[in-house]
Amino acid sequence: MNKPHEVNRVEIELAHWQSKEARFEKYFQGKLADNRALLTAKLQHYEGIIAKYKSSKSLEEVFAVRLVLHERKKIVKQLFPNFYARILRKLIHVLFVGKIREARYNREQQQNRENVIKTIMKTGFKDAVPKVNEQMRNGLSKFEVPVNYYLNENERVIHRLFFSKNQNEQYEFDGYRMTMYNELNPDGFKEHFFKADGSNVFNLKESFNLLSGRAVEKDGKWLQLDLCDRNGEDNYRVKEFHSDFAFDLEKTILSLPLEQLRDESSKTKLFQSLREGNLAEVTFSKNKSETRYIACSPQFRSVNIYNENLHKISLAEAVNKKYSRTVRQNEKPVIKLEEKESRNKVKKIIR
Image (cartoon, rainbow, N blue to C red; front, top):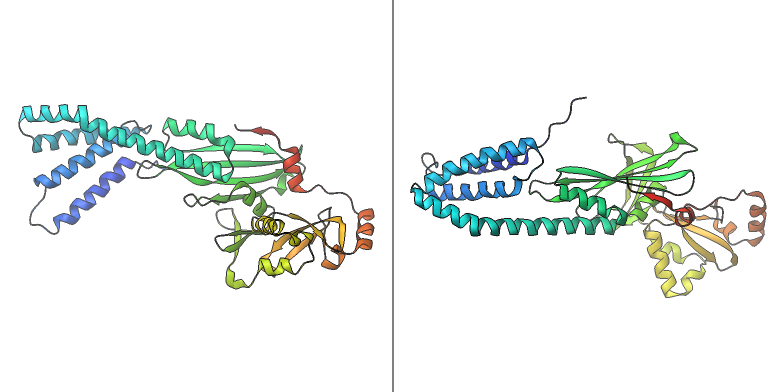
């Protein structure tokens, strides 16, 4: 397989300038090569390129910067034909203008790095912060950071966080690929890429719930992964259910005889938990001694109900104590995934 061509950002910025210059030439007779206003703007543009990319790790970009430096000298000679005027300008640039421009650039870079860190902290990747900071200080045009942890002795979750620089030399968090892997069933892993749209990205809890097959509400719509259907990018197809789909979470939950609905605070927490895609623990009023769990099913405009072993049951079964005792005697115990995560989240590693 051929190595993909590395994007030369200096070349892109030069192309943008050439395009701008060509557009203006259409409105004026003759060439603008000797136009002083245009030369001054061109010089400022070139000096901005030099300030941004002079420390690039890319050999192609370093070579391009050298060419820009050479062109800058030619423009300076055109604008300042007097030798002493050029010396004075260079002195002023070195002592003042260059330092001011570099300080402003450094502030922008620092603010950019802080914004990236805030985004990944918000997403839930606190342990990745040292590695991400280190890679950004290295100035790489793109990089990835792995974050792996075990749910228990057999199940583990693998995350690969992707970062890249845009055309303005600003780092962006592109998103992360999450893989849920069971060593007892190596062929049964689940994997999906969660794209970051600015600071809007699924957090760890939401992505875990989505990859577990549950629905999550985001930006006014319900989203759920179709774990039986993948697209051309090897991601699961995303099913979307908008507000006009007629799934009313509050109306559906309020129709259930739940103890959590008696208290306003508990009711609010329950709604929020379900919107995040969690498997929420509830107590039915007619069967307070039994543990039950519910999860949203917007596709069928309902909620799914599970017993303490996470076996799906009906509403009638959920409130029937006699049925509960019968099922408990015949079912094998199953550990809830969230309990695994909180109880056995060990060997957390950043490699």
